[in-house]
Image 1: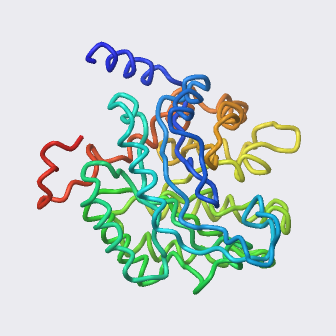
Image 2 (image 1 turned 90 degrees about the vertical axis):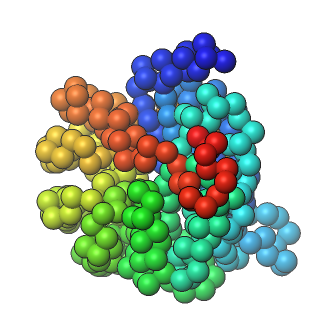
Length: 338
């Protein structure tokens, strides 16, 4: 066993990438086994990966004869699905320790408009002591997905989310937060203040802003948002606890232009804040395109200084993780938890 572990660690240390944003299931809570993910990681040069479930479940409406293939497949709603965390935990616990250590599970199965959300976090860390290393992806403002979600509109600065950040700070957990920077029609950083409120009130919590506040729907309605780069620059200058996830909707048209050439303004920004950016695939339970998704960042990474490229591609995400998973003191199994 020691020899196997040593080999796994050596392979992980020599990897090109860390995937900082990956879902093990889709919006129907379906996903390939984690062994399939690990094989895809080996093939793609990915040493470690953040893994989370999917906090939302797409309803298959009684009046629809065919199951939709995405959350936007029809007009049926989506609803919060807390069992996603248990699904993930059970899959992880079935792995060998040297496999499990390459995967970094985040809690996501809670309703961010419910002030009971922190009770779910507490319960899951008691049920699976030593396992959880972060919180997210927390889905707040998300254009069409938000419009389909049953209940109130989630915000990054709600009382419920403040309880989540407080729990994260107490346990040293990073929070991966999806919060669109604006709406489909407003050509200004309409919702940036909601993220700023969280950063200001909880300076001890490292918040990873998913996709730098962008989304595919925003691109479709607005194209390139000229205010994004200056707004992200201002916020990085102001909030040392802000980190940026560059996963797929940031890659084009921001990091790379229409000719797949690196955009100088983003190269300069990432070089200026070399420890504040990371990349991810944002895959949903299917891993065949893992290598393709991450290698698409190579033109941008190669435009960065070598050490900065390594930080963005590999080490920045890992540096945010706690040294051990959350382990409540009153749980007897904590002394044996990893």
